[in-house]
Length: 307
Image 1 (cartoon, rainbow, N blue to C red):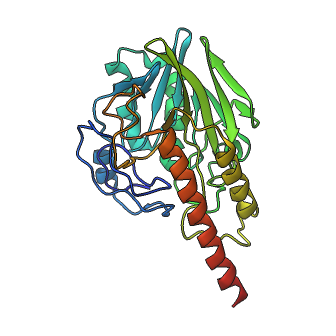
Image 2: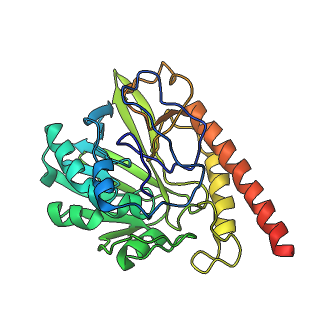
């Protein structure tokens, strides 16, 4: 999961985008749709990749603090929530970015995550040790974090064990300092992948925000008789139906670099440096592509199975 990026992210479960108009950082290749994580690069290169652009406020009380992969700080009057910790190599970058924004790392009270693949949660143990923050995770992802073992269909290396303080269910909420996020279970990518949803205020208006959880399994993983995720096909179909039925959020925050190919909706007041931001139309297009891609893979797997 360590591909060259612009100090932001890769591996998205989609392709065919260009950075939103106004992004100042140069772009580099992103991994193809659903491609399996790249785990073969050296530590020195990983450390260089973990370097981030300067942190910035995206919208409302949401800030970009990530490195190679997405990491978001949600600030409140009672402390802060950190969404995704990335890889071990990102730890120092995230800590530095939080401080650059004028916040105290020790005020991070809760850690949540998109899904239990190591490029998004490997840094959990370091961050929990540093901050004492409560780790919150849903179902199968909570089990993966507790065991330090990737139980997704891919079973990728790199997970590290961390204690989960609160195991949540679909629809549960996390509240801190007047900010509430609601968990939406989307178990296609990992067994406990979670879209976190919240509202923010900007310029006197309310905007709905959703943080990506995951859509479909990584490319190349077994869809049938998968020893780690036996219900991966069923769970992915469930996920796609949920995504299609979801009211498209005003802002969808991905955890990998995205290439939109057009400016974001001008009515969406987000920082133009955000190259993980998708508007409602881009979210709908992502869901369509994810569904088409998955059912094509499923068709091919079924044909192969019959041979």
